[in-house]
Length: 218
Image (cartoon, rainbow, N blue to C red; front, side):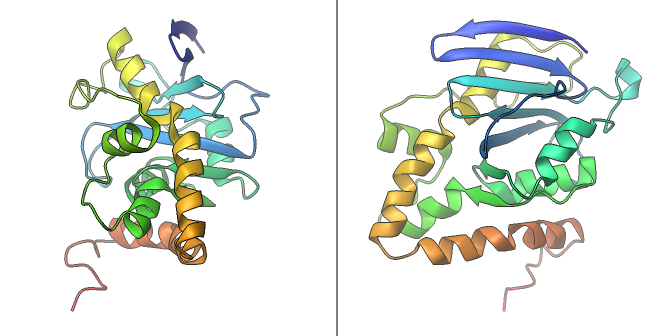
């Protein structure tokens, strides 16, 4: 297992190959994101899982396939964290990430919170619910999406890719704090929680093919 540390203005990035190190404690709420070869969890490979405890540091796990000398989905520490019922997984557009992790790692990811769902419940005056828009408008933080469509399946990831990947989790705790306050203000926190609780099942429906047509559609 390789441990590569790079420093960026908002903290540090640690990149691990194949799994998280033993004994790493990321606290009761961990921000999570994924980078993949595409947007179909049934077809496209999981390449990277990003995590942050909200302390300005990001921990990136590169899922290296056997063809590149890795262990693929053999990552017991990462699996245990994703399935740990005492650790909340904080995501943006959790429906995709939960489904991808379920398909690739074979674990039910729960409990979950989703900043995209939260934003849609309280920011009904706009259709801008992307992570970049929310960080700019709620936190005054600009994040770049320049590396969004780069090759995440490469054997060696570039420093630019690592910084981009880290940015997707470094601000989620602060973003949730702002959105949670808005959910409380608008009396929709319980509704949001009910949506979050359903996300593992929603992702399971997607994986079984009930994403198009949506089973909830007319």
